[in-house]
Length: 292
Length: 325
Image (cartoon, rainbow over all chains, first blue to last red; front, top):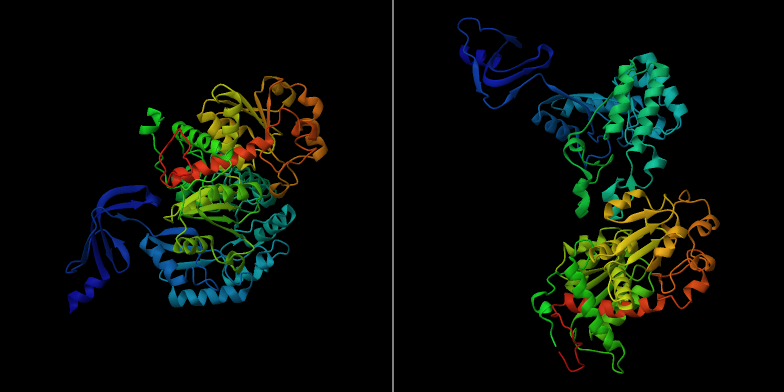
């Protein structure tokens, strides 16, 4: 009885590839956990539960800062339970949920509901984001201060890039008061037009309307300028092109508070995949061309 | 008499969705077969029994005059049963998907579905999902293979061969399925292709398809064996692509005076419908160098050849006689 109680509190994870970015540690090792902490050795008499982990990675919980849990309103696509279960399966212990739900997360009510629902059904930590604009319509600011008090960690109109440079400037100035970052899905809707894939050789061959990288890059450039002006942190979502990376790099070198993220599919796949019109390769922003 | 080439080269594809995937030999086979069928069109009895008992469905989800009637007639001349469906007269109007409509047609034993659709890739989409043969009669801005075949056929008939000939295609290339199919057919058969038009409608990107891209029509015309004029497609156009029709005509319209820069025996082609006075002046469209109506006649022979080869017909050099089965 004594030993079984001890085993739940003590873990010996053997032969894992232990990665700790904070200390730059990366080696195959055994790890001991006792009483909720990593320990060098167990107190005498402890019988730890043993886990054989050869071939597996052992790391601090990963954080995904761009997920769609689709609740409330679109639970046919995904729920907090299914989305967080998928996160856990991939080693992610914290996810940042986008606000383009139905209704959109532009009010304290929606954030409060989301937090309650996460307590009931999530299997990893869920951090909510709120909208930049009311109704995500790009016209008036959402009640950002109230959203921050309700618990949002960032604001974004993900999927509905703020087209007005004036509104984006105000959003950044306002968000700076609360020291939260502003996430932006970078897409100039006039330049991307009705585009359904990357504008390039394959869009020309396939006769499909192109969504050029420049439609993303002009907004990243806009964001770099506005971040520099306001001092607020802009985070550019799912960057797809070398041009976008260049603008981010140059801005960061100047000390501008700007950052970016990239999706695995934008690194691994290219617009050539669309030559059979397989819509599994259709996404927004689209797959770009092969790098040099 | 059979040519030995045709004994080894037979058509093996179920569908015709585009020219890009075809070999030069397959294109030649289609053109040679069309030549055989063209001789039938001059007879008093213009019908052969090759497709007797087969069902051909024209599924036209986008308006068309020439192509639809041409396919209907081609199928009738081959003795097939032909049904034509438009968007307005089908349940697509009620929200039925293209796939479901096509599966229903297949369930009614349609051997061929000839599809005209606004969406690029729609013909390939059906070809991958149905046992029926799918013939692309134009899918968005992607391909219009039978138009390219009839253009190439007309060119070959007038000039003897395609190889080495300089074909200039003028106008709205970006939105043109006719241009794309022509580019593939002509380059595969060894023609030199030059695209001319404003940089917004003819991006330099097209050079990667193995063609030249030029902006100066006046400089290109004296060297052209064929000038193929494409319609400015108002329905697919964005407002920002060029300033005005007037400016377009000034720079890229084949006006009567500009036509004088062409070789004396130049072929003038247009896939229709023409915007007279825009991309082509009436004097040029109706002039002695124009083969616009020949293209239409040849379209019938080409479409008979496509239907015939897709139905499993063997290659031939002689036209089937009315008694053949």
